[in-house]
Image 1 (tube, helix red, strand yellow):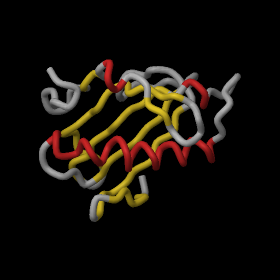
Image 2: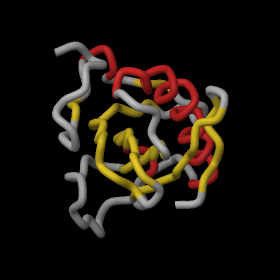
Image 3: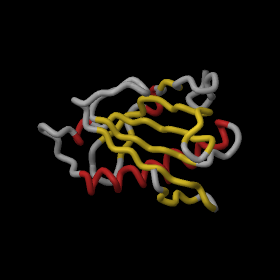
Length: 131
């Protein structure tokens, strides 16, 4: 399987070695945990790019929420948007999440620090959306 080939609908797509380390504006290095696609979100088809970002941890982390939000915007525009066509129809939402540790999709993890932001894609640009 290539690093951009979708898996079965709703199944996580594992990160490939090529995707392993991704630089973001805060200077931290994040890794792609997985991509969840073809699972309805509040507004229809949603594509979720889930990243592990250890530096957002409550205890010992060096990246603030304000910095993490800039990283999320960057990941949407430079990582998610170029890969959207790989997954089929244009999603109604692109959701980018950062977690300080890998968390199984849909499971509660109160010990984890997690940030989620939702975007709609308009003219190839990520536009903040309410989530």
